[in-house]
Image (cartoon, rainbow, N blue to C red):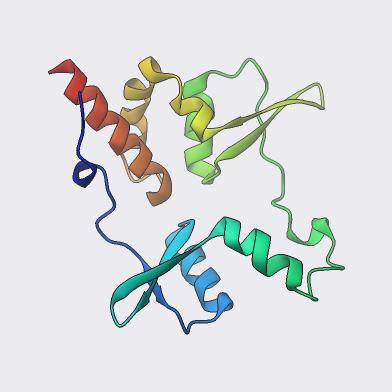
Length: 158
């Protein structure tokens, strides 16, 4: 069954003028917890700036960050799970802490990494988990993914 893009697209798109600074773009992306901004000129889209653009084109040119230590910018304390933790518990933790990547640690040693995308691949549990995430617990950037999967699941059931 085919689903039209209009049913899953984001309707409120955050934009930035092409004359804006990189700092202003980063502030907007952080404020709205999003990974890209559509660049506009006279109200018309002319480009896009993504997290990847910042990593590839901005950060390598920054003199300030060249000597910055990872410990100054890393997320801490480290939030992790053990390999035997259930998917539901893991997903709930990710939503509560607003994280999309979670190290898996056993007896103090790193044994893996799980992402929100990994959890979404478990289609049968996804709809069950959605009920947990449909509250205000889910950050905007994560809730949209679950809304899409719920729409897909509903279309296939009917």
